[in-house]
Image 1 (tube, rainbow, N blue to C red):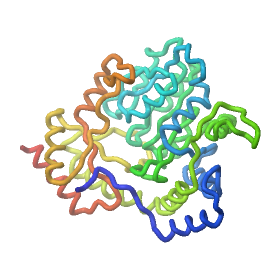
Image 2 (cartoon, helix red, strand yellow):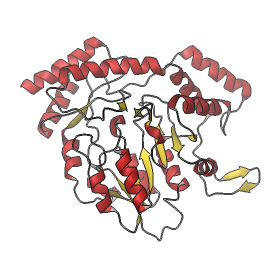
Image 3 (cartoon, one colour):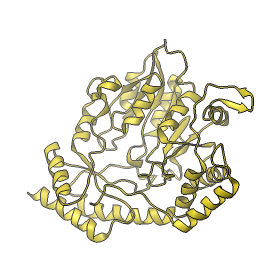
Length: 366
């Protein structure tokens, strides 16, 4: 079976050397040597400051909301954040979990990112933040969103789970907003098995978040903050350091796969529109079909032939009852109904990829 993605597994001997060091130091967590090293190296590689490693990407969002004062302990107040319905459920469920009502507004039909034109009309006296998503690593209209946030004095937390290494106008896309969060789940371009990170604009927010991820503890007998356990451990960091050592190999291989798909399918299917100033990471290859029936039929044909494509993201989140289902967002529902993400990973052979393309082309003709 060809999966939609496959975790990148780095050189095992190098990983074992890092693990040998963990055994020698007997320091497994609580800001160990490898977590500190990975923090420094990621800041340098990504071109950012104020990076905080955490145990997963969902907690990265929740800590960001808390550190920036979007969520608080007063659950009697109604708090809202404007976000996109076209995303992985964690973007919205993390808000709900923190007592923040997600207010869904529609996406742009070409970029599939949150449409700035829809945001301002949804702002109320209860709105505290905007939570856009750089969908599939594509840049949101950051200038417009940041302008709206400044005008209305709102925080902006970008869910940048897909945007590792992405640049915009020559700089890291992660520099935009009050915070940007990353997921380092095993399926991501860069991963630590499980893990995540937050990049803060301001150092004081980073320092507050550092307390939060360790139960609010600041000393052997001192607790200063309401906190939780969201620390990255040394074994996660060891995996991350090895994957980072080989990131260019992984990127090059994925780019090759991505361009093969684009060359064969771009005339027949809708691809995501990206700004010219985007330095993309080739983490995903989503395509939109003419109809939902066609997308479902192609997915079924691929599965029958041992290929898993994913309806990613489906369903549109404003239709999910546990999230406080909202008015239908027509563009999001339309794109969600017709989209498939095709297999893309570093070890996808040209032969297997050609078979996938041939199957899709046959279904489109039939």
